[in-house]
Length: 442
Image (cartoon, rainbow, N blue to C red; front, side):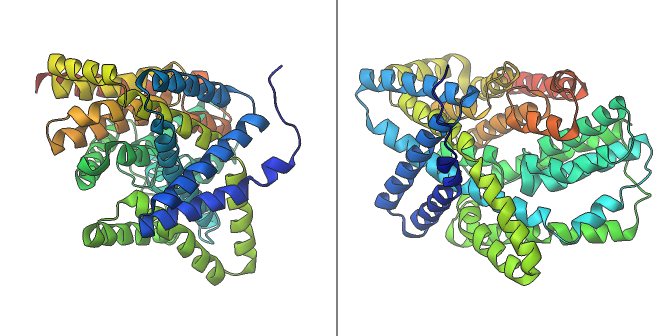
């Protein structure tokens, strides 16, 4: 019987610790302070301890395995700073994701959101597919898997049979997965940014990712599998613009900050989403403000599982890259297969391990941290980041190791096994196969 602390008090304090983590993350960005980063790492470690004491399950098991492997590698290399460094990086990504949960609460409490749902009426099959895929992309940018909370009612409020419900779920999840390729507001992009560091030219990743997502989105329409909806009233598009207005404003702010003072989207989102959300809450009124607070508190209370996974993956990744034998092996592998081969391998490893049930953050962090230093040019670094995002997008659409995929299946009340073996898996597998083949022969 696993040791689990059943007393509710530690779980009730979790939002307070997450708020402290966000404050430390924001302050470390503002003042570039090692002491504040170390404090953030300490808070992340405390959250992990609380999570392991109060939760059982797969995430705790994965963390303990990664932690044990980290200790073994550190004992061999004597690089004990890897644990502190990994926790500090995990704390920064967690502060970023905590901000994204605030953004999710902003979108979900938008007064115009009900109009978006109400306007989605009796569309026929192919326009309905096109609509939910477009909604998946639009809401996937700010909400990631939280987009299902907007789209799921469209699949369940009518008496759809299970086949129709699975069809809608599959197409919406495809849209959400495609948004992973270019959205700066996702865990995937945060991992890419944190793992590849200063060599990453983020504008390249965003541009290539946007072009890839647009091409894959267009392919579905050109193949006749879905169609652009023409029956939706003008008030739907007006309401959609109002719902997404905070996101568009945040994207513009991030671009200005990136071009003027060099803040990347992870840093910009961490700094500005909560204060802007607070201002918006004060403007919207007491009722919506209370609902935003309740939603954010609920998200932060259950956030510890993700912090645990991030911490385990990042301390292991730092330990791996600090081990001389691993560095020599990566250099030999790069010499044997070349940078393009490592890029293709990254996408394949993430997709395969996600299919086998391992969350994408673990293989993505490890492959990016290992292969990033041996990339010969900035373009190769950007393509390595894209490869990780492609593997992550596959996982978000069709892998049982993806929390996003499982959450979406639960929201749509469909079978994860059935949806994982559906059209999205074949669609992304073919794309990854073609892309990896092209990379190997370029």
